[in-house]
Image (tube, rainbow, N blue to C red; front, side):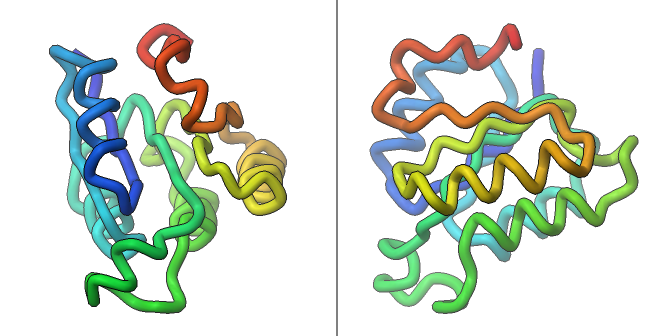
Length: 128
């Protein structure tokens, strides 16, 4: 069973990821702070799925209005390589920010893919 961290501010997306990754140990985070806390306190994740824009969570008063998925990507980059998620998928619809997140993660040696959430139903999340 794989350990998966999902960062997204949309509840329905969490439901979709849970359905796609049935049988895996999934930690759902709505804010960058929650994701960073999970990365620090949990054993290494096999996969992290990251959104960039966390506007819904911020509008609901959950988390810091300044934080976003880039904060989590930067935290992963700063982690010791043996603690980083084995693979990261950036699923944000924000193309410019998603590309920047993926670029920085790749440059740091993290195995990363950029797959917009609209393609999530066709993603092979567990096998890459």
